[in-house]
Every structure is written in structure tokens, then in C-alpha cells.
Image (cartoon, rainbow, N blue to C red; front, top):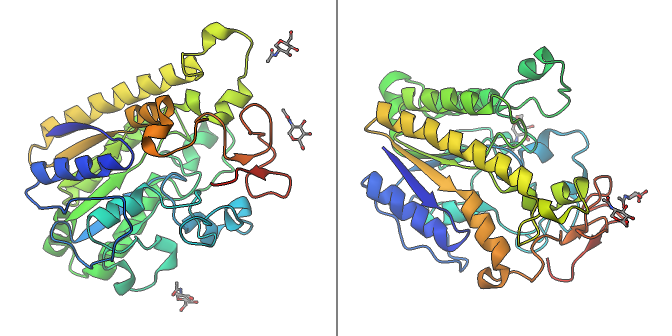
Length: 332
Ligand SMILES: *[C@@H]1O[C@H](CO)[C@@H](O)[C@H](O)[C@H]1NC(C)=O
Ligand SMILES: *[C@@H]1O[C@H](CO)[C@@H](O)[C@H](O)[C@H]1NC(C)=O
Ligand SMILES: *[C@@H]1O[C@H](CO)[C@@H](O)[C@H](O)[C@H]1NC(C)=O
């Protein structure tokens, strides 16, 4: 079964969860954006596991990196948690909103836990900079592999460690755990275009073989609207920009990626009819946000980094947010 959901940042966490509800007979409370008292458990999924990269990392990179860099300094974390906490964001990130909607506490970053109690509600395996493919693949292609080794494959081995802690009895014990958990796989692949889809496919297959029944797979963001791309590939050729000022070719590339991803997921859904495979359309959500940021409570310049190293997009690839020379907008 494959369901497409246009994932419009806040309000659509609700839509996404209602879709999951619809596809996997469990009930989800109405979600709203107000901070709420955290209830343990929730009446739908007993656990939530997340895999991915910096979009969903909430502390793994900061815990393992010898010099984690900017993420360990303000303005990261300042708006909601009031201190840097490993999220590459000043506030909450998507997994926080999902956990909230499920009535669960915020996910424990895998590297911040030791015991089964730490993972009672699941875990977050996402690591900033993670790739879908492992280092061997990149080395084989004579490409640089100095980024984090914690690829999807590695994150899967972490899941198995957690499963072992939660249920020493593998067979039935594991599949019961898996069946009552929600899985969010990505977005990922933004860090490694080639072949990533296929790795993702076999990853999802493995989750399903382990017993997963509900897997949410987001598409990638429109990278042509990303201030980093806009800065690096800045051009005077106005034909290369769309009406919002995003670069067309990187967005075309992302759309190609997302189309192929959807086709893979559709096939996965056909093979596994009892599994809800949900495609979350981050692309459409981000485009919507870019087209009308005020509607979503953001300021008027969606293509300019709030925090960064100057220039038309307040982005300089050597001056990162959190560095002394970076500037931060008044209200991040
Ligand atoms: C996990 O256990 C190790 C060794 O016992 C300890 O040093 C570390 O602080 C613990 N980490 C957490 C997050 O509790
Ligand atoms: C755009 O044109 C201006 C004026 O001719 C030139 O100074 C600038 O370097 C050009 N920028 C790019 C990115 O090509
Ligand atoms: C980025 O910042 C560095 C260091 O401050 C500076 O030397 C460089 O000119 C900047 N690059 C751009 C494109 O502004």
C-alpha cells in the first residue's frame, strides 16, 4: 500500500498522522502547534524510530564528533530548548512534532542512551551528514569519504542493538516490537545522489523483513531554493531561476530523485500489501513555504539564511552559523 501525503510543515504533521491512522488502524490525537504536556505512550504506536541525516539529527553528531563545530554553539537551540542540543535548528525539528503528535516524549538520540529504558519510546539514529550509502561505495568510486561513517547501513545495526536490548528473544519478540512502531526513513540521499535510492529500497525491505508495518519515507527538499546552492551556483542568467528565485536545475534534479523514489515505494507497497508505506512530500511543503512564508508564520525572505556569512543569501560556505563572524537575524 502506498499513500502520498503532501507534508506541509506544521499543519501537515496532523495530516500525515491521520493518513497513517487511516492506513494502519491506530488512533492519533489531533495535533496542534502549541507546546503540550507530554503524555507517555499515546494510543497508537508504542515506539517511534527515525533514520536520516542533519535534517532529523537531535544529538548524535554532537555526541560522537570530536569537534562538533557550530551546532554546539548558539544560535542553535536558543529558541525552544534554550541551549545547543545537537539539532541543526534553533527550535524543534520534524521528529519533535511527530513525537508530540504521538503523545510521546522527544526521541532519545541513539548515542545518548545506554539502557532499554532510554529507548522505551524508540530512538533517533539520524546523524548529521549521513549518507544512504556506506564509505566503501564512495571509496570504490574514488570519491572523498571524509564524512560521517554512520550511513543508513550503520543506523540499521544500531536499530538491531536497540531491539536486542528491548527484546532479547528475537523472532516473535522483535516482529511484535517492529509492528507496533512507526518508522521514519529520511529524508536521506541528499548527501549522496547516485545509487542512494537503491540503498534506500533495500533498507526499507530490511525493516519490513524485521516486521515493520508502518514506514514513512520523505522525499528530498527543493535544493534549488537552498541558500547554499543559490550562493554556490549564483548566475546572471535569469532564465535559470524560477518565479520565486530558486535555481531550476537543482530542483529538476530533486524532482527526478523524488519521482524515482515514489516509483520504488509504489513497488515496495505492491510487494507488501499489509505494510503502510507512506511517501511524505517534503518538496511540496518546502515550495509552499517558500512561495508564502507569512502564511506559515515565517518572515518575508525565505531564500535568505537567518544566520550565516553575508552576501545576497546570507550564506558563505566557509563562514557557518554559530561562528564569530556570522550574523544572525533578530528573531531566529
Ligand atoms: C552510558 O554508560 C557509560 C559507561 O557506563 C557512561 O560513561 C555514560 O555516561 C552513559 N551515558 C549515558 C547517556 O547515560
Ligand atoms: C554578473 O554581472 C556583473 C556585472 O557584469 C559581474 O560583475 C558579476 O561578476 C556577474 N556575476 C556572476 C555570478 O557571473
Ligand atoms: C566568505 O568569507 C570569507 C572569510 O570571511 C571571505 O574571505 C570570502 O570573500 C567570503 N566569500 C564570499 C563569496 O563572500
